[in-house]
Image (cartoon, rainbow, N blue to C red; front, side):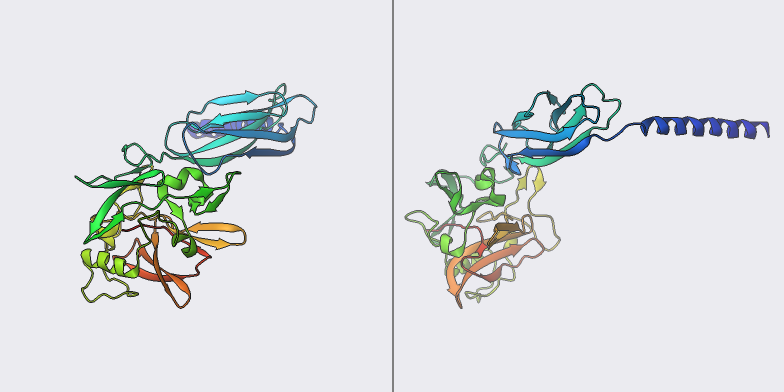
Length: 340
C-alpha cells in the first residue's frame, strides 16, 4: 500500500509539472499576417542553377523586427535575411534527389513570445548526362560496338531491326522562342531540366516534323517489324495489339535511384532493342499540358492515322502486351523515336 501511495504521488507531481509546462507553452502568441514565400524554381532543376526566393507578410504584434531564414533538406544549412525585401538566391546542389526549400519567419528580439511561421516547396535535382553512369537515368547501357549519331544537339545510340535503324532514346528536341517559352515539343512537367532526361512530348502534328533530315517517324509497318523481332506472332498486322514483346522493349533503368518500370510478375524486362522508358504522356488543353502516366506508361507516336486520329503504340507496366492507341492530333502528346 505504501508503494502504491508513492506511485500515485509521483504521478500527481508529473501531471502538475506537465500542466505547468503546457501553461508556459500556451503563453506564446502567433504573429500577424500570412507568410508569402515565392520562388521562381521549377519542380525539376539541374545542379548549379540559381533561383530567386522572396518572403514577406509577417509582422510581430509588439512591433519588434521580423527576419526570415531559408533552409534546405540537402544540408540543413540556414541562411538568415534580416532586411527587407528579404530576398535570397538559392544555388541548386550537386546531390541528386528530392528535397525541399523552406522559409521561416521569426521575431528577432522576442522569439520567446511568438511562434515562428514557415512555408516550403519541394524540388527534384536531376542530371541529364545519360552516358556517364552518374546522371539521373542509370542502368541504361551502351551495347558493344553499337553505332551512334548526333541528332540536333544530342548523341543517340542506334538499334537495328532488319534494315531499319531506331534511335534508342526518346527524341529530346524542344524548340524555344526568344523569351524562353517552348514553341515546338515540350519537356516533362514543362521543366527544361527534364528535356534530355525523358525526351520531348509532341502532338501528332509536331511528331510528323520532329525528326531531322534523313530520319522519319516510324510507321505502323516499322512497329510490326520491331514487334515480330521481339517475339510477336508472325500473323500480327498493323493496328493490332501485340500479345507480347513489351519486356524486350523496356529499358531496365532507374531515375534518381528508383526503378522506372515497377516490377510486375507478368513482365520480364530484357531491354533487347530500343530501350523504352515509362515517360507517360500529356493531355493538351486550354490551360497547357497536363502530364500523366510517368512510371506506368510509355506512349510513342507512329506516322499512321486512322479515322482522323493519330496512331500511337503504348506499353503499360503490368502487361507484356504492346497496345494500339488513337488520339487527337493536337490535344495528346507522346514521345517520339526516329528511324531510317
